[in-house]
Amino acid sequence: MIALTSGFLHLASVTFEIPIPAEAAGMRADRFIRQRFKGVTQGWIEKSIRKGEIRADNKKLKGAGDRLVEGQTLTLPPLPALDAPAPQIAPQVNPKLAKTIKQSVIVETPEYFALNKPPGIASQGGSKIVWSIDRLAAALVPDGAEIPKLVHRLDKDTSGLMLLAKTAAAARTLGDAFKSREMRKCYLAVTIGIPAQPTGRFVQRLLKKPTPHGGEMVQVDPKGQSAVTDYIVLDTLGKRYALVALWPRTGRTHQLRVHLAHHGTPIAGDHKYGHGTPEDKLPDRLYLHALRLSWPGLKKPLLAPPDTEFTAALGILGLNFATSHDPFAEVE
Image (cartoon, rainbow, N blue to C red; front, side):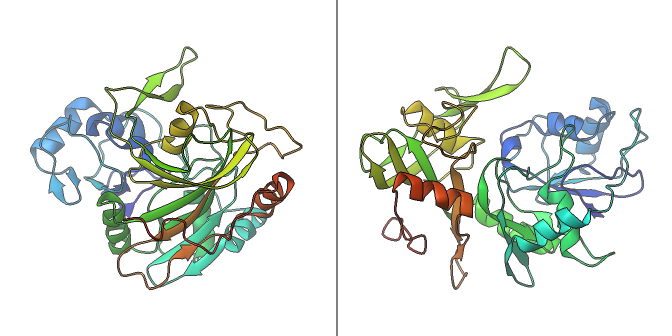
C-alpha cells in the first residue's frame, strides 16, 4: 500500500491511501478520484465501489456521489491501465529546499513533525506547482524511509503551523481530531479595517463558485457549506488596521479570508479576496499566520512564532501581542 498525498506515483499493482485535504471537503468521491487519477473511468470507480474496494476511513462507500470529509483517508484498490501517461516519480529534493524544510521543523515526535511553514510554499502538489510541502517532506527522513504525510493543509501564502504524520496510524488519529473538531486552532491576521465588535463569531455559509477565467472563488452563499469562525481583536491602529486572533471551528477552503472580507475587514495582502498589495511600506504578502494547535491528550500546545517579515510588519503598524498567550484560553 502507498500513502499518496499528491499523486506523484501511479502504479497498477498497489493500493493507495489518500488523505482528503480541506479543499476537497464536500466533493463527490468519483469527481475527486477522476481529478486525482487522470484516465480512470467512471465505470471503474462505480464497479470498485460496488465491490467494496473503495473505502473512506476503512468504511465502504455507499455510492459514487458520497461526499468526502476533510481528514478522511480514502483507500483505492490497484488502478487499471490508464490512458494518460503515468507521472514520473518526484525528483530528489534539491539541497536549498531540503535545508528550508528541515529548518522549518519546530517539534518532532515519534508520531509527527510540526512545521512552521514559510509563506509562498504550497501544501500540496498540483499541475502548476513544482515544489510543495508534501514533496519536500522526503527531505525530513532518510532515503527509503516512509515519507511523512499531510494531516491538513494551509494556503500557499499562509504561514505557520502544519502537521506531517510519520505513520498511517498517526495520520488517521490526527485526521480524526480535525474531523471531530477537537483541534483548537488559532491564527493571527492583520486586517484592513477594524471588526465591528471586539469579539464575535462569523457563521456565513460558504460555496465555491467558478470565475469567468476558469478558476474558482469561495463566496458567502446560503446554499453553501456551514462555516464557523470565532474572532478576538487583539490590537488596533486607529481605524485602519487590526491584529485579530481567529479560531476556525470548521475547515472550509479560504474560510478565514472570505469571512473577514465579507465583513469589510479583509486580510492585508490578500490579492484574491481583499485589496491586494498592502500599503504603509509593508512587504507584499498575505498577513495570515497559523499560530497555535492543541488537541485532547497533547500536554503542551504547539506554537509557531510568526516569521521575521510578519513580525516586522506588526512593528511598522505598532500592533502588539504576546504570541505565547492563547487568546481563546477562556473560550469553549
